[in-house]
Length: 208
Image 1 (tube, rainbow, N blue to C red):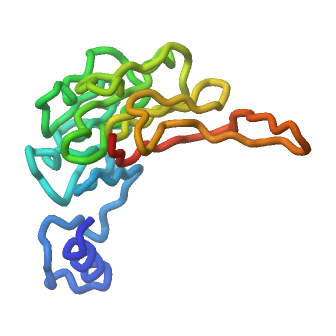
Image 2 (tube, rainbow, N blue to C red):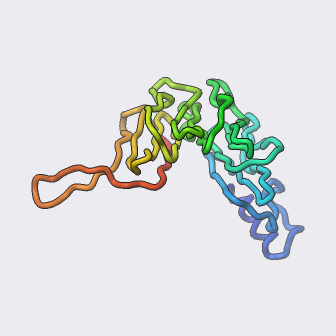
Image 3 (tube, rainbow, N blue to C red):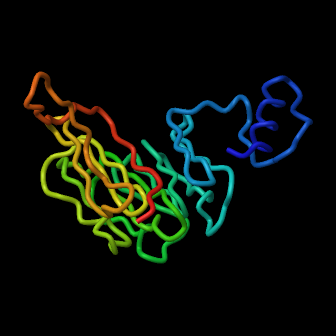
């Protein structure tokens, strides 16, 4: 959300609806089930299960389609959502096929969010708890590993997911921001690295 949108939103919540800095700001009386902040835009599932987006609308990433949704994910140049029939639909930039979700049932979806050159993939947890990714795979960020997952997050040039045993696994670029999972070291020596149980993970901006 930009400063102009925030100012407009606050004015509306202070019963001054005629003061408008940015008309794309949501109304104060709008209530949401979930919200997702992308690189330069925001999308949310309203209490009526429809999706609305605001902010930058480059390539139509804020042009949310009609229909009923369970969840939504705002990425870098595109957005994706899981509809009430468990299918995924996406909108916005689609140069690498990042908006072309497979036609299967999903529990959740994550639209890639990174720099302008590495935000062109998406990942989702399917109904059978496996992960599939689509779009740009230059760094292997769309090569989802086998196994059961609880959640997944698509970053820029890498992706991470929480597995059924609550450990985190990542795949993709392994440069400056290496996608390694956290570890807890026991004391005294020798230190033993063990995976830290994780409930949810979010992938962010990377520089391969």
